[in-house]
Image 1 (cartoon, helix red, strand yellow):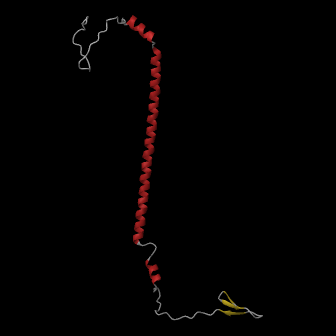
Image 2 (spheres, rainbow, N blue to C red; image 1 turned 30 degrees about the horizontal axis):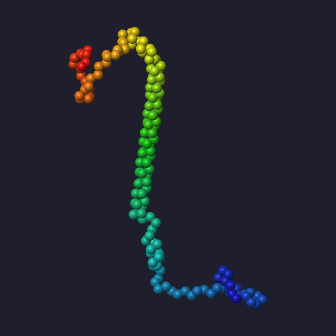
Image 3 (spheres, rainbow, N blue to C red; image 1 turned 120 degrees about the horizontal axis):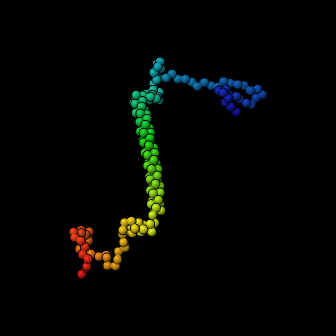
Length: 159
């Protein structure tokens, strides 16, 4: 039985092992002579032709890089304007809340300022107003229905 160990064959079977070198493959001369710096196999030619960075690849890569940078700048500008508008909206909302609070305070102050009894006292004593008596209110029917213009005094009696 023979086993291969580092290009050497070891034959087993006797008391002493004999190491024999591996047989070298026979070389046949190539059909084409090799010249310095040139390769003749298809794979080598293809590898030589497909360089990692040619001019077209570099231009496409540069164009894509510029597009990415421009889109990032545009995105940052839009994001900044959105944040600016959000801050303006928040300040306007705060102003609205302040005005609503002021209005509520003024309304409460006005409501607590005069009661109905105070208004009646001022109207009757200071302004000379009186309650209407029965028959003092005259109702008119308007044919047009939108408003009434008064050109003369209202008559005292109705028919």
